[in-house]
Image (cartoon, rainbow, N blue to C red; front, side):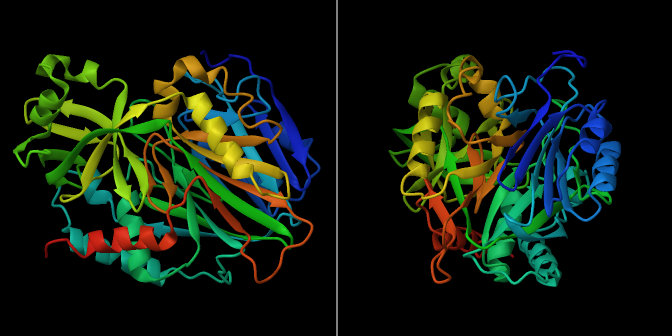
Length: 441
């Protein structure tokens, strides 16, 4: 798709929420035409436009709003002709979501350093204990004035998409004991060269940081989250023996017969193929780890045949079990998961915020054009990410947060609904804290 390719620009308003799709060239005119007073504005920006100028324009138009912007690997918007907005070599597109005080009572933006400079450089690496300790200290030092109550407070988090630190952050978060609410969001996307991703709060841009927005819902507004991943487990599982969390690769595994082998050799043996056939055999498969009763996908980034290492888009620790999973229909699975999410809800979602893995866009191309009707009449916006967060770091997954207006919400009742994600917060915490306490000194 060329830089000048057309899309259907416009706005969509639903009871206190406004979504906008426009181009950088038309942004100022589009913003000037809006009559809206947002408490919170989040936006998803093509990596091919002037990100700083976009942020400056948005902040100038809405000086009183809390702002969270990030670069993408493609945008999603249900008011466009296609939910998955076209993204090719170059494109000009900006998608915004604005929330007024009838939906979001307050929003507070904080930035937490990820201490990931060593991962991106060639110098000496921090030990795992030191890395988690530094992150934990940064989280403990973060000043937040929002009174956090898991019943009405949500942490909308965006990571530097090239920091490779999402899992480390979540481990440190649970270790710190701070911010007892759900963290949901994703990692900023970017161009296919994987050289830069950016996040912005309307004042400045950040790298090597997590941008967290603590959102407190308004009275009688509920937020709900769900995830969808179009995979089903297979009988094959491997136990990880040696791996690097910073480099995100696996070297050796233990198969079901108790034999130690490189992961490359183990996969060739399990799939009954030669090394040169392996990637073709894996085309419809990925891997996942079990946390509680749920699977969290871990996708293959590349295979290094010389060192016989399998690199992933998400870290896996020694001792964890890898389950091979097979791809299923993205349309059918997402529709089923969303229908389950809506069951028992009294209010229609005002808007859904989607963090959708770039691999879902790349690996399900034949289905993208038919995804428009999956969410029915619910307006949705979002972006293709370099990683997703729903209490843990994920791959090849759609994580979504929606806001619904209800007639009455009891103060004693939770305003959070987590459907299609039965894993509990305590399971997530136990997984992460247990992991961090196993690091060697």
